[in-house]
Image (cartoon, rainbow, N blue to C red):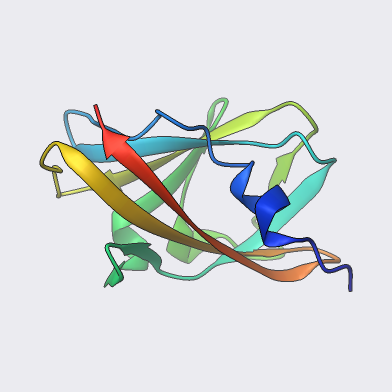
Length: 121
């Protein structure tokens, strides 16, 4: 399996996209590397604390899928240049700097994980 350097993985995160919404908070990932199929997700980490899978979902076009529901059979295809929004329900963030740990399973690449810091807008 290909090993992608962490600095490239961090570039997937859209800096400045972390914000509160009506249900909780959200941020965006944009795929500028090449086509990728997300076939699983591990718990999102907020300030090094896990968030339950069923509180997080991917929103990609007309598709919305809970992290818990993403599998090989129910995958999310991200073409190069496409963005996906990650929404977390039930938790609003105070303004300030936050740390996000992102951990997904990508077909033919395996476990992809990286950590980013951003300011809540």
